[in-house]
Image (cartoon, rainbow over all chains, first blue to last red; front, side, top):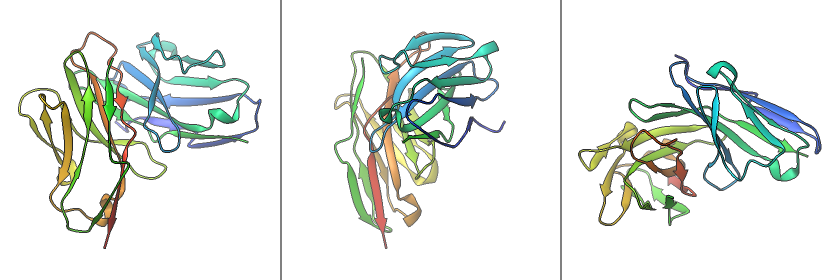
Length: 113
Length: 116
């Protein structure tokens, strides 16, 4: 078990470009969460998967954002037509429902220039 | 819905001194409570959590927290801090029980600054 892995660690992109992030959760955890953290703030919930089903989405997740978790394993978060306001740390977490142990990845820091 | 208030945005303290980081929450249902630490450009590491049972919870790195239901608080304490404890600390809450989707709601964080 190597924990939750996120790639890339850093991404710099020009405004208007599309970006995709990947999260590999702990293999036994069937619940996966995406959060966004802006500078000086706590993480904010974006979306949640139970296995391959996306069961909840925050209002923060505009139409430009899409997330998938094919086959209930890794997940991807795509942002289309990036804007400067999308600059943030994107965190992924998986949950062991047996002991409510949320494990976070190291995050992907997105900078839109 | 749940919410978390961390009133202190920054807490300066000298090395080897005790520290308390305050956390208050609001919820209409029973909750689980968590403290996470975040070092620069890193993800979140769990320090401790309260699910049920004893209201005094001990975590990693010498930290502990006490759940006070009447005051809706979950303050984090350490009797003697080290320089390496300098980091951002987040309190978080989720609804208790396993039927919902159990999202974590975070406070805005408290920066602990330990100086020699």
